[in-house]
Image (cartoon, rainbow, N blue to C red; front, side, top):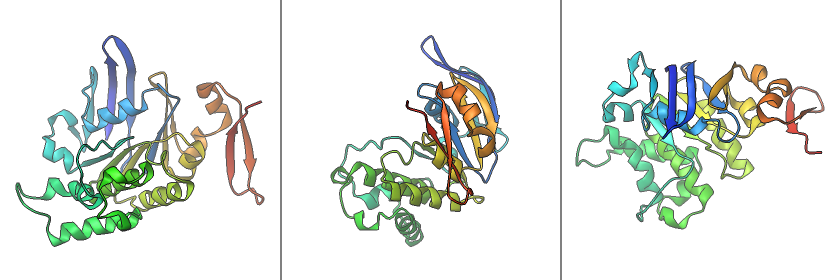
Length: 254
C-alpha cells in the first residue's frame, strides 16, 4: 500500500498534510503519535471510509478509490476503537459477519466458513462467549470479538485502531502475539499508544505529529528518547532488564 501526498481536513481544519509513505507487505506496522496527530483519520483513509482532499492511496498498485466495496472487503478488514452494536447479535454471529464478502447473496455460512470463525474465536479466546449477546459482555470481551471478526475475514490486510486499549495485560499480549504470527502472510497496520508494546511487536513504525509523518523506520530507530521527546514534549527515561537484553521507556513525571 502506498500513500502519495495525502491531505485531509474536517471542514476548514487540516488534519493530515502532504503525507507520503509506503506500507510494506507482510509486516506488523504501528502508527504512533500524540492525540490529535491524525492516526485514526489516516487509518480511515486507508480503508476508504474517508476520501482525501488531495493525493491518492494505491492498494496493490491500483487507486483505492477504484475498488468496488466487495473488492475492498476482500482486501481490508477493520477493527475500530469501539464496536457499535444496536442489535442482539451473539458473539458467534458477529464473528460470522467477517465472512460476508465470501458468502453468496442470501446464502448461509458454509462448514468452511464456520471452521474459519471457530479458529478466529479460539485465537482470541472468545469461544466461551459464542452464544452470548454482545450487548451483555464486557468492553474488553467485545473488543476481542471484534478482532476475531477481522481475523475471520481472512483479508491480506488487517487494520486496527487501538486494538488492545480496552484489554487487560494478558489479553493485550495474547492478541498482539496472534496478530504478529499472521505475518508475513498478512499485513497488520495498528494505531497504538503503548510505546513499549509497539516496539516489541512491530516490524515498522510510522510516527505522526501535527498531521505530518515525522519518522518512519524500524522500532529502534523510532522509539527512542531523542525522537519521542520532540513529539510528546516529554523527557523519556530508559530502563533495562537485568541481562540488558530488553529496553523499556517511561515518561519522566517529576
